Length: 195
Image (cartoon, rainbow, N blue to C red):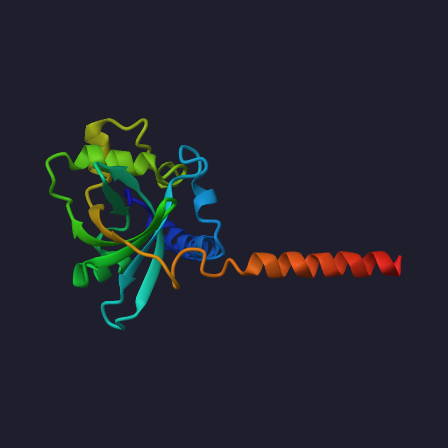
């Protein structure tokens, strides 16, 4: 993050944890692609699944991203302390849920790339309102200002290797929709009988 006051950064991290739970629920019930309808305003979202560095269990994190030359790029805005970032440092094989599918990939920190700033700006533009919210507006900052504001950011490249299908992916709880629709129809039918 840009230089934020510690108390604001703590509040922001707590807000992101709550927002991430909502985003994961949307992906699980099959609405993930709908979240990407207005990338310029709301952002472009994916779900990154890492392996927990201590638990060995899958850990899912919604993130903003950009696709550049067939690779997926994302940013650890809180730097190297982000759990998902530390997980992929330990276990670079990841899964990503994108609007166009579910992929296994290899992740690596590419923060030292010569064109880091251009790629970072592209990812931040794909974050919609999030980057400006924390004081890093990729549309207005000069290269020097952007570089200064993002010195702690970690740029991650994910190379998709193979498409995945089956259980455990995006839309895994889409069964909720028919059940909810049926419950609503029954409720409406019963309420009309009582009137």
